[in-house]
View (tube, rainbow, N blue to C red):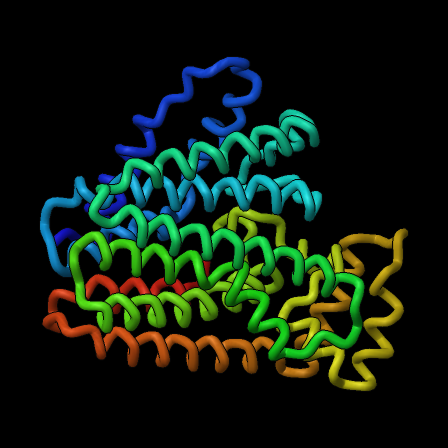
Length: 322
């Protein structure tokens, strides 16, 4: 069995070998740039970790893993443009380093490159992998659309938010795990349980990401703290605060306001969250999803010791502090 760190080394080595020799260089240089920024590489690692539960030679699963990671970075490239974010993993985002049009076109090319990598999946599994990946990409786009629509609404419910992050974030983690299981000839039941495991760690991971956007350390988080607050992003924290009538009145003074002192807004909204105890409330919900994820992994019919790295990863992703 490979450790998570060993799998990460394999993933990073293979990503480093991806070359784009097409013209014009100006279209492909931003793709190489965003892939070079690193990141957690969780999604390709999950493909290989799920595969490694049943088989030892990881080569068969690597093209699928690289396709999923390339697609994930494509979504980040376009998300940063849509959110007008200036920092990604501590570096300038593509639309800042180049321009908006480059971010759009390079993102489009990146999506195509992701599908070309998925196309290298072993023919025996290609149909199932292609269908799962395509369904997942559609769900992610739907999640992004919901996220945009929520920006214009003040009545978004927690249930709607959870469904949005399931689509936008969790399904790709789940897809990665199920792809690895499929390529390793796992049982359908195991593949489905790994998928649900991915859904729950994905929900916990995104909730934690939203929490760290307010309460994290910018040096380790890789993004500016308070970014969600500045753009009135409907996160679990903001949606929950808006359910309180007094807090809703206070927030109304900030939401939609075009001219304001950024640090003052971040401080004021964070104070509202503190007063309502939303940090603790969010942490409790994250823990619930972590426990659901563990329960799903328990059902996977592989020796618990073999699953040890996945148990540890679930804890690291959902209960992390950075």
